[in-house]
Image (tube, rainbow, N blue to C red; front, side):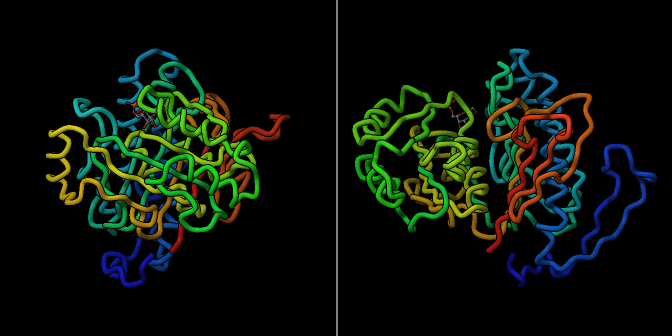
Length: 364
Ligand code: VTB
């Protein structure tokens, strides 16, 4: 976080202590916590965004498998908005979540928080994978990223071309504008393996037919996901565990910003381009002040400072465990340098399970 941020330097942080799930002795009393400005995101908002993501996930989880994408999304969005509005920040949402006609969707430009606090950008997808949730399929999750004001790419409700890989590769080893026939061998060389040992994750959509054919021609393995490309991009961060080396293809722009925030925390690479394929979308882009509609963004241009990313599982998945009702939570069972996880009742679970929440912290 930039030390010279005036919005933060001039204020001391007050965290309302009324959010312990009803366990607080006096819910109206507020405890004042002073922290160094550069630690605000990490020390205070880490806990806050976990709660925000959890509330959205729990609300969506009540509608798992019920067949209504809209109801599940609305429940998650309402819960997330409610929680965001309790944060003592001056927050501005930079992404649109959900369809334009959905009244409950968080929208780009929406102000959240109690205002009067430090300024933060917020990218949010209260229910990433609405279809997955409505159909009770794996990997539906609530996601949110918070960063210093003015540092996250503001993404319209549009598509985005994306390519992403995990940490440990030379810079620009993959290039959005290079064909798979170049990207796959480049990645294989950098990893020290044959092209056949590279797996590319792609959303299963007819628009990707040529991409899929080209990846296969390049000798790599294609793995499909039906929805949920925030998780798809995050998979590339841990190829040894997930088996995914590279994410490619066109998905939602808001999802792209969220995925970039997550990946930036772990040092992965990502390049994207917004897709404005209709006159209406180009008009919306110009309304949003996007001058160059064909600009290629790198991950550093999408997330230009410190950030936090949190994801909570709604349905069980390989990245996150879904919400369990009626069980106690066990906090911080798996605390690491960059990742703070929560497990439910780990002592009663014989086999290792993915965590329910992941928080990733990215520092400049
Ligand atoms: C992706 C995916 C989402 O939308 O962004 C995708 O991450 C892109 O849109 O979970 P299409 O479905 O139109 O291809 C979702 O699948 C749903 O929002």
